[in-house]
Length: 86
Image (cartoon, rainbow, N blue to C red; front, side, top):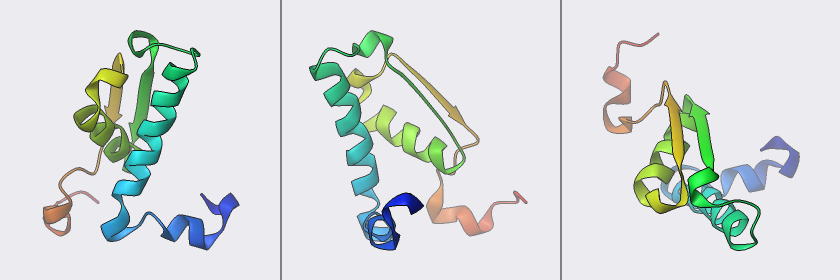
């Protein structure tokens, strides 16, 4: 997100993280609404932090996506500091 500057990036951090999920879902919904694709043909993929993004999209708006690939996601943020991953 660096191309939009620090304020854009910081607008979706910590307690405002949901804004990133909402933006992602809004783009998917718009692609469907304007006829670019349909839910059955729309797939999403993300790894690491992107895995958290697509996992949230899958749980929050499952009707938007026909396929989800969630790779090495960081999903357990409450216990993240206790994970043994390097």
